[in-house]
Length: 630
Image (cartoon, rainbow, N blue to C red; front, side, top):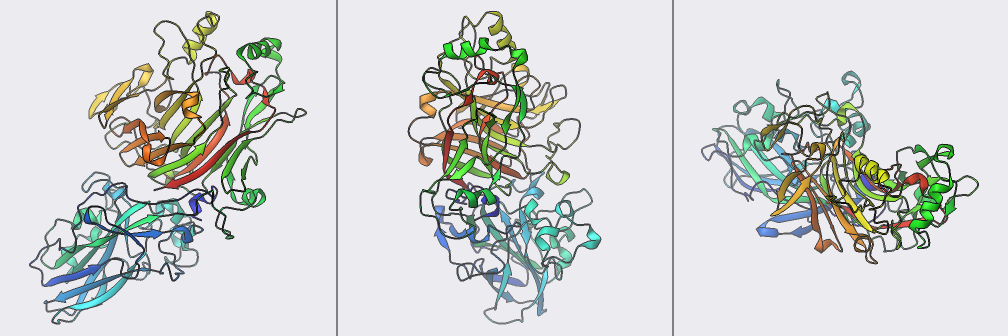
């Protein structure tokens, strides 16, 4: 299975296009027609048939990457090759040479277009593009080919490979320059940090450039591995497409490559391969990565009870709250990590918050995360999270979550400064990024002017509720809040750009909600107090979210926007939140996917506070039924 999802061992991984940036250019030449050269044909994937898809007349070759998932650098195709997957994607090209030279120079370029900035965008050099992907230490950039003048032209073959850190950027490398061997050696993937900037998911376009004179091509376009003096790279697609040359021709292939992964559905029998989902909990324990966060210390009532039972009523909760002196409650670790996930016989992933041992009670989190990270993508999961509010309206202390979290707090994975002039903390770069869906109990307060939307009811409303004795609290309310958050680390005491104009404080700060329209619907952006997250929250009833059928959750993370969706099935997902780079800093970092059932150590979700909720007498189970990244 794919290295980035080896810890999940689940669901159908399907990589496919979200959008493309340029129209299909077919075999039409893009450069000058006066050059003494002509590309009469260019087939990008001559040795790979794959599955095909043809929306709007396009020819898409679908590549199932599941055989390469154990390689941290994520190389497509796998260098070892197989009958189904060649060692290189061969490109077949026919060149008609009418120049006076028999030696030409050519280069093959590729670029991911599902998750890319538009050509000419100030950050289009962040797009995932590269050239060749092999033998770069020996012959980078444009390579020589012998093409004699011949009627009908000369047909040649060349190979290309997609791999992590395609420009061999030193920022991602794990060894100092003097100790690194040439690329493509046995330690290439580790030393060159291929896993830190892996190929993005989705659709790739291929471009062929042939010339008789490389001097007319910009130096940084000839070798896209080189960084310019301004610190940026020159995107070859932006440079070559639409430009005229005297001695150079450019052509974009009709075929595109759509990388996806589609292991068996979780309900299907498990194949006996070590890179698939383990068949037993013991095997899974050796492969899965559990939550990487330690627990929080806080007091808790020394009681073990069935917190999901409907007999645990508000009155029972209040009796416990007043039975113990809060100043003498034993302090325990809430949210300890532990081996709390398992694989069911049917192949699904179970998230299990285990029953507490009365002799040594704990509240254990249950979570799994991907072993390797992603930059951008459409992350989708079909999950059966447990009920977190019983029919009496009492919260059991669990907060399910489906989220993305920074893969490393190191300079190579830092958040870019907002290119429009915004700020991230005191530094230009921050080593933290998070996008999430979190589910928790709504506050459900009934006093004048209170909006039951998941925003109000934090510290100031908790104080008011306590001051008024909870007289206006609807304790039986079963409302659930879905929080959609992007931790952009925008400070509130410095300027931030909103829709191109300076605004202080940043949007959504201090309870001032900012409207944003997407597909004709308005969403409210909110920043709570000193929070470093911009959020939108949606209130649903517990029965609506935790109904007998499964719920699909989706986070679509693109270079300039983030979209959150939920729905009863994949074909009926609805948008519940939207943010764009006009309002927030959209991360460009490598992030893990985490699916979790947390015991949140917080007192914000009154009237039920974690310290007064008993330890669970019985396991609390959730199930992950499908998972995909497109």
